[in-house]
Length: 433
Image 1 (cartoon, rainbow, N blue to C red):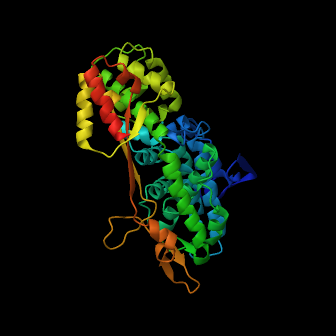
Image 2 (image 1 turned 30 degrees about the horizontal axis):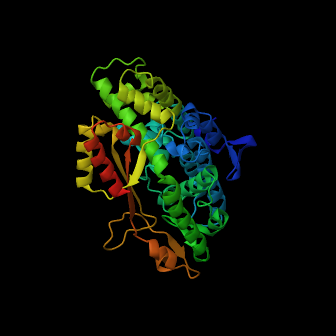
Image 3 (image 1 turned 135 degrees about the horizontal axis):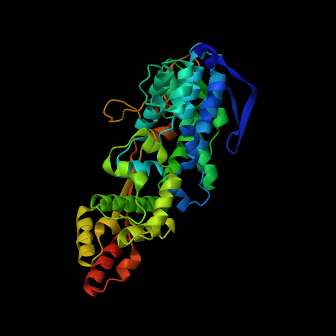
């Protein structure tokens, strides 16, 4: 079979995945089916979509595997709808489908939290996996020698085909449309629900971007407000962030102990490349959430009291307490000094966490945004940026909302023997409450 034939080959019988969000995910292309079967894609079953959010919403256990299939399915449906428009080149079909399926291939365990701790970048590793000596690369190369690079360029947004990029990564894309609905379903809330069927019907391919038919403006308003609500009610939930705090601190302690020559009862073999900053693709793929959780459970029994305590807290959901925080550097430094006086190391037991979101913005004179706008297409063919037509979207355009929390172990404070120090800490914390 030639490369060209392989890229066009269809399965004898369509394969389907039953899905709670899209009902069915349809696969007819041999290339897509072969990519799904690769070990690198199957690894995504062992990476949670929402990291530590299961600590706040017990059913949020779905995986990057689920989500990646969902993004593929939405793009597949986009492609079907786009066929009737001259702006769409159906030669780009397989490129769009493969990039949609593989867009999250490089996510590590606990996703964004893990990236912060070890200074890794899931997009960089997605590229390395696609272009490296992997099963995914071997499948893509059977389409054409250049196909792996083409797919990688779409995912890292450097491809010259801006339309295909926007299908997967823009302010109204398949990635967001899947994770909002999927995460809403698995957390048991309704914030992420919006009329995706309507949005898909009013999407049009443009020269460099997805365009929305003007009559679909209200469906987009609903989508953007769903995104806003999901971030502030779900993704930024302080209990989930508290789980990330503990994971961050436990792995930071393990890294410190390794650097100090501490002899672990359970040596962190698979973490060592991350501790040293010399991570190969094989090292990266070897580490999933099953492996991380194994080490955390083993570290509960370590002689180092701090590592043992932090690991115990994460594994058994014994989270730090939290308070709203205004970001005051003076308050932070005062509390850190008091923690030290009390014999509680603040670098492991005192943590401030800040987060922010920009629900909709676009690059315009006077703004610092580099986001591409959402355009509405009027009946006469004229394009209008959506916030100029929608009062709802105009009201949230460029609005940067921020919040901060302070995390600390309440029971350790109550156990402080120096009553003066204990009282000062409690008074400062009460002032924040």
